[in-house]
Length: 208
Image (tube, rainbow, N blue to C red; front, side):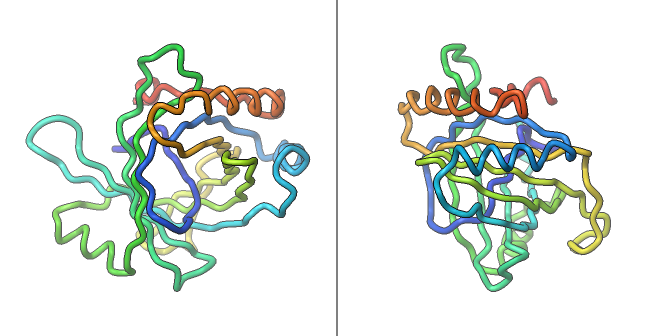
């Protein structure tokens, strides 16, 4: 079981407990370079950050309701770096006036023993994947362009297979609750990426 929409933000430092505003889309492999060129022109004047992360999705099934889901992620480019544990709340998609998907986001650093701790707490690993790509910044906005690959042999990140012939594109902002005006800025930025990619407010119920 998977909790869509999948967010593949690369590992970053700090602890965060805020709302995530999110727009998502995809671009075919053959159009990737055109999109990256556009992003370099629109985003802050700095080189994009490359990343390669291994993410494990853990579930804890309760007596009622949906399973509790946590995401554990580690950097493959910087193995000594701390793991990150991420909780994403249920998306608030009912408000039609909101231009972006909104959900609670808690992100904390953790030790390398995180998988063992989660197993001891009763969580079970549901699935894992590798995300490789680039992170662009535009003020407080982040644009992540990533290729997702399934892990064919559990735990072996060298043995993977692309999930599709496209790249996932995510535009996100972390902000305190009630700062819905950020979604207007996100929409304006997303318009500048058309027709290369169409970023949308994805209703997770459509993906169930």
